[in-house]
Image (cartoon, rainbow, N blue to C red):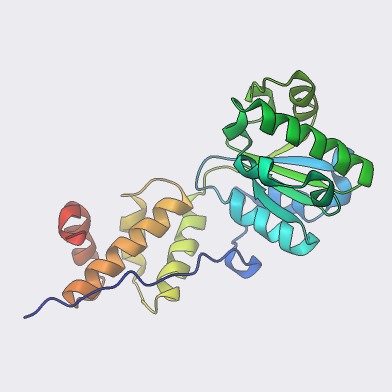
Length: 227
């Protein structure tokens, strides 16, 4: 039988509020982002490991507050005076630890936002006290910023996310498959998305249903699913 062709069609990377599941691992962060008025000095750092949902949660907040959303690497391309007219999200602060010009840009943005009474949300993998920014004034202001932490997602949360990811692809799966996959993956949303994509591609290629037996075959032979 001829192998079914698969195509790299563009897929949505949803950051909508309906696609974010609240659990004990992220409930405190969700509560903090729902009440910007409670942020000391109108700023907050959202900390968590890769795949913990920082970007998704930051996008939800940005949508609710009409905030600008930028990566720290792009700070030098921004008009800071214009940017400071609205709330701002700056992601990936650790990326500019060796970029003094970008740090100066963030320092000015921080001060302008404070003057304009607009909130600032920053995201990073580690708390500000560990950033070691070369600009001492910026490091001081960042270290004094309130922090809320996202933990790696637990099994209950990952189960809900994986069921949603399969459902988005019109794939019905059995609970025993989800239980099996949880034992084979890292505790992150990124890992969940990758494993669902891997199984979906393999199933389309071989015209097979995604059962526990099929998943075991694919995951034990990754080269086969990527062929």
